[in-house]
Length: 483
Image 1 (tube, helix red, strand yellow):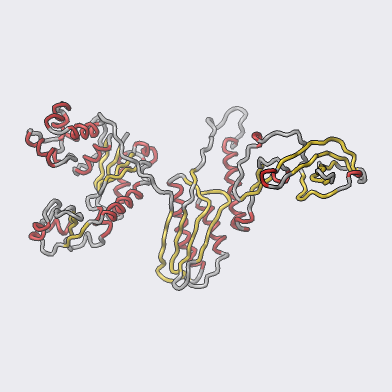
Image 2: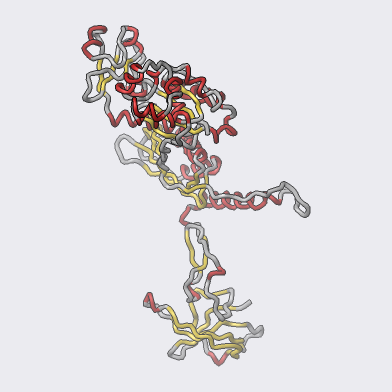
């Protein structure tokens, strides 16, 4: 495997302070400490540095502005950059307070070489004005060590030891006491420490140091806990000026819906609904829900639905902004592809006909939903209820029914079933088969106790086969017609 470590040395200040790169000297401390955790470039130019006492820092720069780091905001800042990094890796691990682990070996086919992927990562965060140090290594801890030391390298297993040999032991992520013991032993580089026998190092210095070095070199397997991204989409837009025309409003809404589709496509998700709230100054927001018949993540589908839904909106007041919300998603179902593009007997296009047919069907259903509304689209299915009038069900979602798992009966049922049974005179029929008894429905207080027959109608010029039943009180009804 191959790992990136992204080190943001000024993450808290660059996230929450717009003046971080200004000429005002800024410094940050934690809630209980008197030692600086971070400083901005203006403070560094004045001689202030991290790990300096606050009183000493004021002596160096009397105009220094000291801010207390809020733990919740610090975690939110880390989660913010983690969400941005999620587009480069499916495995993102957090390292508080200002680092990220990215598993990138599985992403090389998509992004190319590690150097190319590293350049894309740097370009994204530098555009957002984040200071970033990135290193790549075959183990997460080695990448962490290289990045925090400032050695922004891309190394593999073959040259890992050579890269570590150039680093001073102060780069190790160990306690001050452990570092002092190593210095007393005359050790200078990390390579010097790794070459010592593990037993002697554990006895003379620290057992946790040995575990840490084994994780760095890969002798001990370790992976960071992956971040589970919440499947929730929230996007808020505040317009520069009030909008009274829906045609004008359609342009920013289109851009927001495109971001929604990208959100699903990057995560291999589908969605069937999106809730849009149009905000006003003096009245509650106007709801603009979009509901598909089939879950989809294609941009053209959602933009078509947006155009159809916005035509039915009547604005009582100008729109000051809007919010997009969605929290119900489903993974893209796996699809089967042909092993070979063509083989004897396969016509051109046969291997993709099934997938194209499903996409065309989903597109048609979604367009119908946009035209006539989701409340007018129904899917049919078969229930397990033995009563004929309850066997066909209608639902707003596709009904998954396994017809072969239904209990098989000896009843010969017609294809055309009447919506309501009609009373008939049995003397007008010649009974051909029957009876077949149906005694069910006891669980919902709608019992069905019937004897079913197939009868040939006598009085008609073109005799037809009817499906008849007789109740326990000797009344006859027609329930269906045979072709």
